[in-house]
Image (cartoon, rainbow, N blue to C red):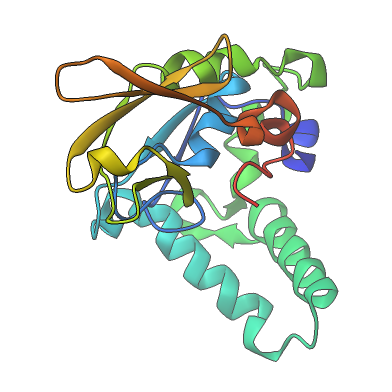
Length: 206
């Protein structure tokens, strides 16, 4: 959130689909996407194995890694300090010939204007819940009668072993509604991992 405090809230953020940003199996909504939605930020995920969809960021990360010599950092604190220094130099001091031998910030003064100020009170978990509630999770019941939702196993019932059931999130109770093939409710499973506090702190699946 430090970046939001300094630069304000963006309208959208694009990331790749690998962890921790996405879910490579694509069988669940990424927690980071839910977190961004709660802030009113549209998450945009690259298609799997398509880093070229975010080519400029990929190239910039490679360059920043070389400049900061990340492989030689003895600890996380040193790594962060070098990355901060690199970002400041790249944005505010490094002169580029093709744009008139000036640093990037000279052409992008709008970056210095915070158009969407960051306020913690703007966090609205209901925006994330409403999105999550639109998704149907098909799950095959294991031999032990369980299903897995966001890396946690829940008991669906031994009588449904081997069958496909559907899980749907209910925002009002913060629970999963489990439906059989005829869309009959067979179980309601509370899941406080998705509480406002856990979502705000990004500790949903920890």
